[in-house]
Length: 211
Ligand SMILES: O=P(O)(O)OC[C@H]1O[C@H](OP(=O)(O)OP(=O)(O)O)[C@H](O)[C@@H]1O
Ligand SMILES: O=c1cc[nH]c(=O)[nH]1
Ligand SMILES: [Mg+2]
Image (cartoon, rainbow, N blue to C red):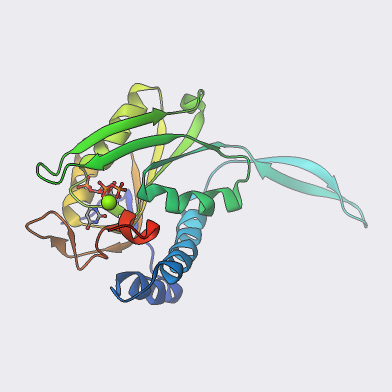
């Protein structure tokens, strides 16, 4: 795969350490959540890079100077369930971000996404829409989510995930070259069950302690 300009794999020593915690099958739920939270925060920080600012005058105790506030409305759309694990990372930086939800699970036989819940806030056409899901495997869920959000008027979408398979990145880039994909790891491939290799298993199950 030859990732295009709209693909970013963030490399950082803390990410390398935390990805190992997430990949380790012996990691318990509590430590999984802590590592997920740290990595998600770094991803969110990068995903918010280069958003617009509005300047205004602010008075320090010493004098007046130029201050800034974010000039972009942010909407976060987690793909349920596992995407919920990345929402707090965005709202840490943007406490007033609105949060919509897309419920989708991957059918165990067909591996295709099945929708079960939709709640998207109004006004996504004037927002930066951050779609979050820890895993980008075949790309079926991501592409369905992006396609749906575009049909609802979203014009600027970034997709944030923890681990991406080359197949998933290619699928998103082919259908939606304008959508930036930001990940902590580009893994090797998918296995015969369409799980990411080496991956971390089923992200939703590991976040929520289900099997
Ligand atoms: O790229 P794809 O091949 O579509 O696979 C990725 C999807 O699979 C996982 O969700 P899952 O279906 O396990 O649902 P869950 O979040 O409820 O566990 C994951 O969180 C993605 O949404
Ligand atoms: O490896 C994978 C693939 C899809 N969904 C997951 O949670 N993990
Ligand atoms: Mg799952």
